[in-house]
Length: 158
Image 1: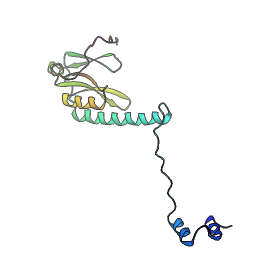
Image 2: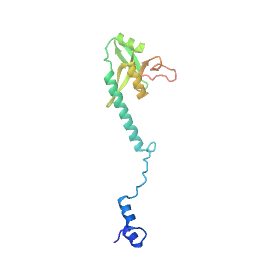
Image 3: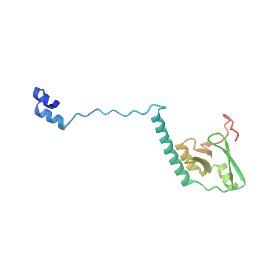
Image 4: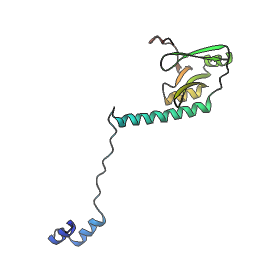
């Protein structure tokens, strides 16, 4: 059985040089760009899950590096969780005043299997807010206020 190259040579449709050039430099196939997965497809869900895991990892690293240890005390400080439930921290009076004055913030720390809450300096909270809108649970900053009642939605009871 003859190859196509041999048949073309025998028929005189190509020269020996053309046949050699084609074999040494085969034509390149046009590269088809990979399209993004369709919204709602399993591939899109996997892609979104990977993004969320990466964001959670970044948030966890930043919170662990900057978190302020909780000073247990008699002052109860309430904040609202992502699900709209009231949660409390029993803090020292000094830490509660730092939260109220806007020097500290309450943020989520997404640990594997659970979401814990931590105190961080306001600069870190603003940086975390840039990564994910929902991570900061309480922040009293002149430019950004999070966790204050805005009368648009009543908080759910615990």
